[in-house]
Image 1: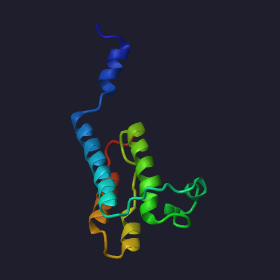
Image 2: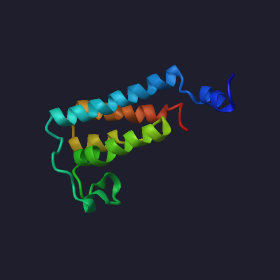
Image 3: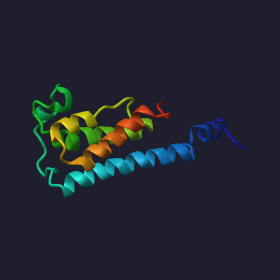
Image 4: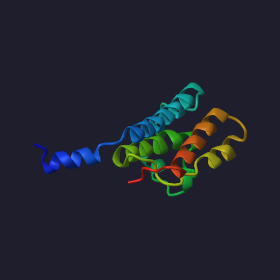
Length: 126
């Protein structure tokens, strides 16, 4: 016999489409991390607590863009994805990457654009 808890679990269970969508996002995040590591943009030294508390967009006043990606963007996006099962709506990170890298690191910019586009087409916001 199904209890009310069992029925709710059935309704709250992610669909195959939602799981595939989440896996695509996680794969894109992993590709961004891998690119940062393989291109020498990954840092072994974490920023100071003060640098991480910047209120400026992309922490541009205290971190290099790739540090922001590594120490703020990727961890927070992974946490958001775990908690909400979706991306934050209407992200726009790729334009900043394009400006910072001025035609370089195009695979990184492309993956950020993929995430931006997924966030704008995100049917699973919750």
